[in-house]
Length: 105
Image 1 (tube, rainbow, N blue to C red):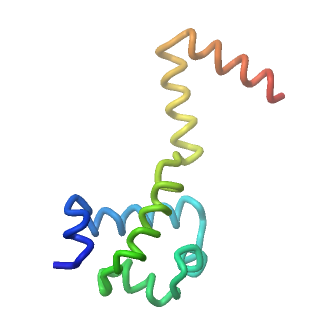
Image 2 (image 1 turned 90 degrees about the vertical axis):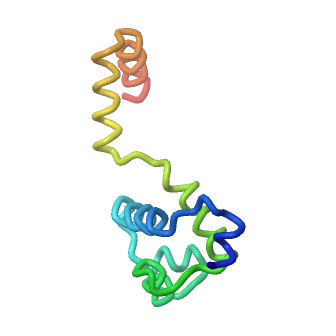
């Protein structure tokens, strides 16, 4: 068992890898760009993403910060879809969105 699993038993390496890959696609980043943000080589990141290497606690902490920063973002298409659904359900929400759109025009 890796030391990080003792510190964070709730951590799911496969889910973490999936989230990193999703962020890379959504942000249109290269592995080299993400590796630079994490302070590691692209080759090391590639091994982590292929489950060939387990991040040490220091790297896992950096990955956690990356996921906290970028993991919660919603893609523009998903955001538009959610706003549309909410506007259909709530006239107050629709009015608020319409007012916001007038401000930014």
